[in-house]
Image 1 (spheres, rainbow, N blue to C red):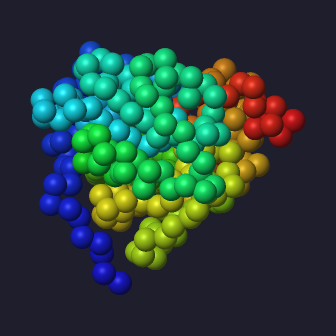
Image 2: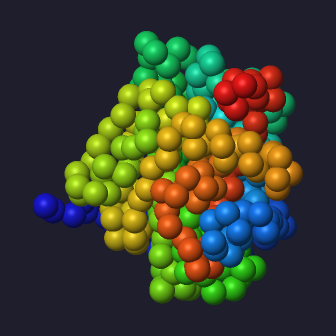
Length: 326
């Protein structure tokens, strides 16, 4: 088995620290939430990093802003394009508004309505597509080529990854020594960036990614060392429906991540309900993956100090009953 080659411009821990400096005053230093009930149920000391309280309601603004801010003046003047089911869309739209950069976002027709509405409200041009018959990357690249736009993809980009890694820097600073760092996995931008940062500042801390069992491409890729793919997996965690890890995120995950676990749809629902009822946090399904891993026993964290990233809170309230299975 050969390890995939890391691109020469791949981000480093120094890039994560540089992103943290750039993002000061732009993003929130999100709080840590604690729950005695959660600690008792899992037998661990759990520190929940609340990126659901971040600007745009998710960690994605960190990578989106870092990437757009580092474009050349000429690239900024031409505008940018991305594709996203929602949170990266909002991040690029808001970053574009803050930096004076025109943004075009390719989004699925069935994207969660709150994410779609917010993206438009931030001033982006939204191009809708049918995810069952069209490939968003192909459509996005065609539009970008026609208009001369720079592409800032959702996760497989060095500046996006570096920006997302600032979540781990903050969490380690706020929570102190951790035994385990847990985070949701879609395309691996958050996981690879945070693993890169965590291994630099807390090398003894285990870094573990959490995926829906219905969208376990990253877990299979991690286990085999061979890039696995999924196509429109049937999971309520829409942020984890990405087809695969990328050319940057895959080798970074293999180099810096210690383990991967998967959780069922029922476990995600249970975690959503627990966070709403007991911790009073509004969390979207993807954001609940780490708590799902703890509550379901997919990860045995007994006796450990655990940092668990709650990646986003852009919950479609109209669909809440369906999401919770009620």
